[in-house]
Image (cartoon, rainbow, N blue to C red; front, side, top):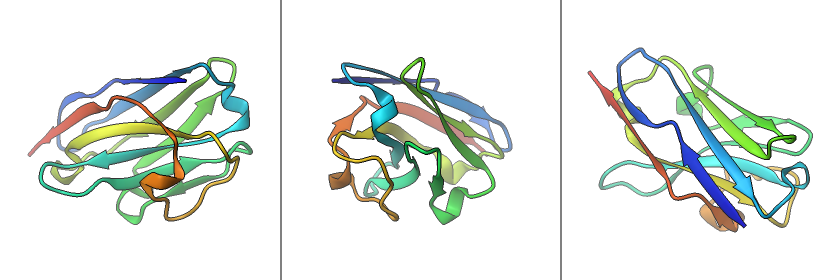
Length: 125
């Protein structure tokens, strides 16, 4: 199983980015997926999760700004990030729960067995 995240970069506050996570070695239809992030000097933080039935969940700080989605035909997860803030600066990791179809909220890193390598998002003020 491999997850490859990309789409990060440098953006000004108020801007948008779309992260993608291409998976291989699994059939994404059968698994919940999500995103975590880790800012410098801080613990890894759960951001969002999407179940196999497309029910979505978000941590409070990104609600109404971020949108998670999935394309099962492409085995790809997405995270659309709008109205970005400097405090959104972090390395973003995509994750897949190899054992489950629903989301645990709030999720912990231990809930997900497959992790991407991370993509850096930097939001300037």
